[in-house]
Length: 307
Image 1: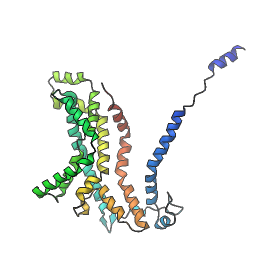
Image 2 (image 1 turned 60 degrees about the vertical axis):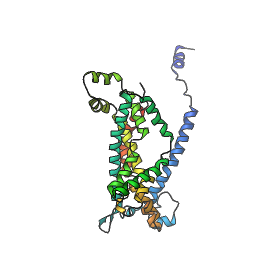
Image 3 (image 1 turned 30 degrees about the horizontal axis):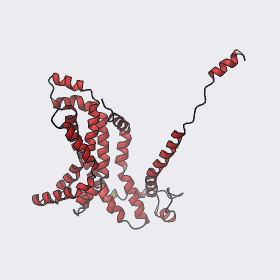
């Protein structure tokens, strides 16, 4: 064996081993993703069909040749020269989400800051008690919450006031224990020396909170804001319970309105419009996710870091 062949054998790269577990995991995740995505694809495809195409091919995912149309997306925005209820419903949901995000971030960040950087008696026991409440299903408190809403509204004569109704729609969903837990984990990743140094320089807790702590957990705050937005936008049971007796269509949120909107449809063309309305209501969620997905992944990574 000459020197050239020895050199070739030394330089020959070893064969890569096929990781069977990764391949199996990939196909399992692909199947699960397909099961989640398929209803949305079918909804979008049906919303682009003509009435004739829906009748001839009701099980088809996408329109047949010549059956594509965007007319289903026009009637529920402008109807008879006036703004239809769908944009109003989306506006109601959007305002609800923004207020819910603001209240949640203010309350939960202050609570998490107290648990992370303030020393007071019973801190660990109180935090453990809060974590234990996460095991209790939230639906159990629905009866008590509705009783409080009805009694206070009757006494103050605000039971039919839309501001009062939306106050009760927003407030029970804010200040969740899971949100406090995420923020507490993010704050635990901040070196305590930074906070102690600021205190030794005479900075107050509010100054430390706004100038030091908040900028360091921006990714986590964005993640919580995204979770809060999607949760508030998709909320159905509690808003439906409060808004079902108002009798005013313009006060509804988009999720509550879509339940009645899709149940009242009659005929194949109306089903296509219902699908188009549902697809249209997903636009804000998709836009927010597209622009925040990178920060969302960063926030999920930082919330699990402990010092």
